[in-house]
Length: 125
Image (tube, rainbow, N blue to C red):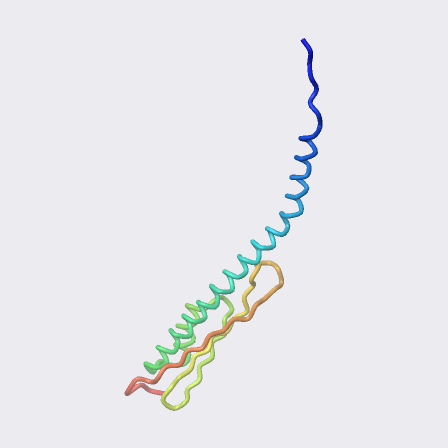
C-alpha cells in the first residue's frame, strides 16, 4: 500500500483566515463599544426628557420646588441636576446629567432636556 502525503497548501490558507480575523476583531469590538455607548447615551437622554416633563407637570399644578425636584429626580439618570424656573404663567424644568457612556472608561457625555408647561388656573406660584 502506497501512502500519499498531503501538500501544505490548505495550511497556508487557514493561516491567512486566522490573520484576517485577528485584524478585523479589534474593529468589530470598537463598533460594538460604540453601539453600546450610543444606546447608553440615548437612554439617558430619554430619561432626562421624561424627568423634565414630569417636573413641569408638577410645577404647573403648583407643587413646591422641592417636590418638583424630587419627582424629576426619580425619573432622571443618577447624578442629574434639576433646575426649575418660573416666568409668569409658565414654568420651565431643565434636567441635566453627565453620563458615563462606556462604564468605567473616564468618558462622560453631557445630556439635558427642558420642558415648559403653562400654570394651571388657581395654581400657586
